[in-house]
Length: 145
Image 1 (tube, rainbow, N blue to C red):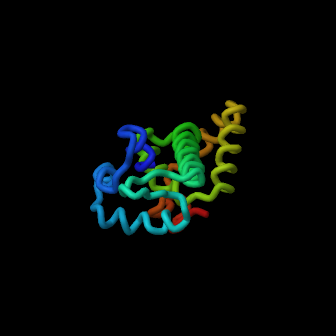
Image 2: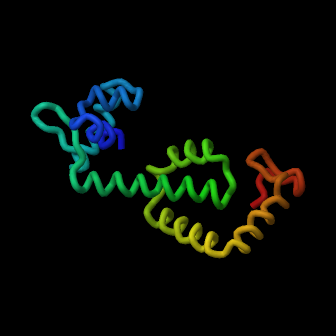
Image 3: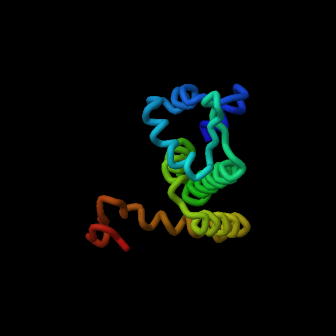
């Protein structure tokens, strides 16, 4: 995404520009890009300018769509604060499979199309406010699953 954004802004994307955008060293970026170049997702021309291949653009679009699905689900279904939802979605977007992303999208749309059900589920979660990663105060378990 950083390559696409840099390219869109400048008309080209050099390794140094992308590294600066990501706030990482050129060496770290170069190492990270090697498998993507090998998979032909990223192209590098004779001037060392980077761009996305068509396959790379589709891959980036899928990640961007997954990010949108995640932020929307976290905010609208789980009532997570927007800032936290964006940070969490950014951490997860590269890891989630297309199968899980599509299922999350379908579930989100189904819940949004049935406002009463969405409200009921959100209200129901309040019964479990004492459940957390650190344990459950109600059932005295480490995790209430």
